[in-house]
Length: 41
Image (cartoon, rainbow, N blue to C red):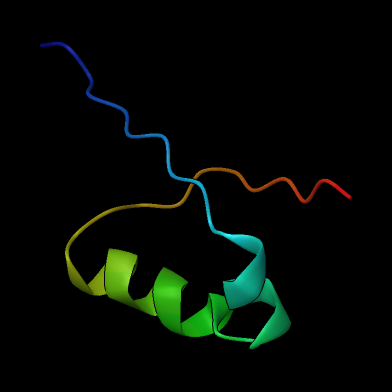
């Protein structure tokens, strides 16, 4: 069985508004599992 992966980018204005936690919560509520994050400046 193949594993599907989804790549998601969070825009800088969402980072500035401190809503990253809410975004991650929505992903998890939808059944997604967050396996990694990376913050670039």
